Amino acid sequence: MSRVCILWALSTLFEPTVTTPSPPLDLEQAAQRIRARIQPVQRVEQATLLDALGRVLAEPLHSPIDLPPFDNSAMDGYAVCTPVEQDVKGSQFRRIGVSAAGHPFTGSIRPGECVRIFTGAATPAGTQRILLQEDCDAQGDTVVVSGTPEPRSNIRSRGNDLTAGSLLDPAGVRVNAFRVGRYAASGIDKLTVFARPTVGVFSTGDELAPIGTPAQALPPGSIYESNRHALMALMAGLPVIVEDLGSLPDDPAAIRSALVNAARRCDVIVTSGGVSVGDHDHVKAVVESLGSLDFWRLNLKPGKPLAFGRLNDALFFGLPGNPVSTIITWLLIAQPAVLALCGAQVEPPARLHARLTCQVRHSPGRTEYQRGRYDVAAQSDGLAVDICGDQASNRLSSFDGANCLVEIPADAGDLPTGSRVQILPLHAL
Ligand code: AMP
Ligand code: MG
Image 1 (cartoon, rainbow, N blue to C red):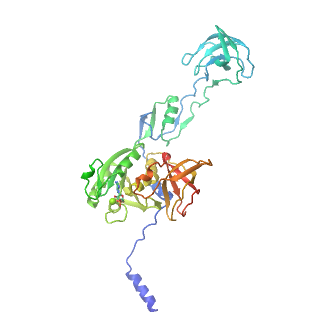
Image 2 (cartoon, rainbow, N blue to C red):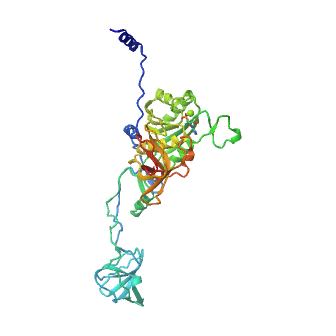
Image 3 (tube, protein in one colour):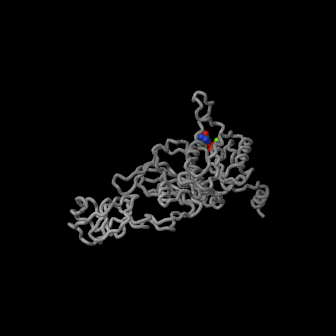
């Protein structure tokens, strides 16, 4: 054996065992790993329609009635029993009664007769069409068709919106205002929804001072704590109970005891900061010692360090500390996971195509989400999107005026003005 080989063999004997860190995950890989570990809440509750706003249906909802429940008039006018296709211009009808909304006419209509009728009123038996009042002249009880009525019945027939027993929504949808309207129209006043999981929110960092501290009283090197407030605001519309667990120092013992306590009463724990590789980043190590860490790095910009794991039965999301990274990783990773835990059917974020109105610098490697503002293009071949200034992850100003995230694929280099990109509207996240 040559000397080189012997030296190599010896060196491998004494090489320390190094565990290779798992490679950073793509957004989709991370989402799948998280989803595989989520057991949606099972507990259900009854809620009134308005209390159910934003919450998740726990069972399919069917309409108990036909909608509309009876044939009714779409217009103000005169109900007649003449067929729609018959030309009635110049015809005369004898008015035999009135049908108003909530006050139906109980008789029936025969040839040569009409019933004064208003929008939403039940059509009397025999009605074939409603003549618009604009097409008619009434003199006492005689109604003459003076206009040229369109060949339309103007009747909203029973069940033309939906029929009794039809599915209003499957389990897993989130109740929104339109759904509240639809359910109420079917007479539904209470919904069976999933119980709201509890989400505890911490910030971490010795440099963080509470908002409200007078600027001149800020200790040297301090900044105001913003992530926890932004996170709680982002959670405000979700079907969760948010627990503000305050701010933690960069002290492993303090972090440890706070997390142990939180894991006893929360279904999800969200922290910001302290998950990177600095000497003062203790959160990851504490979670690893108390529970388990599934992954802690993403192929994402901003938001490379993101720790996901478990503490007892609680899901743990350790979001990065830079304020923009905190918000983006919450929106793209943690929020969909929390919604899945709430029992919601989570769809991938809505993406639209747009053309860049400026150049974007990007080095291949990580998928990047820049803050942008889209609008209808001046030349109108779709949407145009501009980037909202400097995109450094500490600059919350990059959200100023932003209405979307501009997705820059991991393998892309610099993108010239006019490039086609995909955007994620912020309102849909
Ligand atoms: P870290 O991830 O803890 O290294 O923090 C990264 C950067 O984000 C640092 O500049 C921190 O000062 C800042 N930061 C961390 N947490 C917060 C917070 N809750 N509010 C505002 N800035 C923060
Ligand atoms: Mg920190």
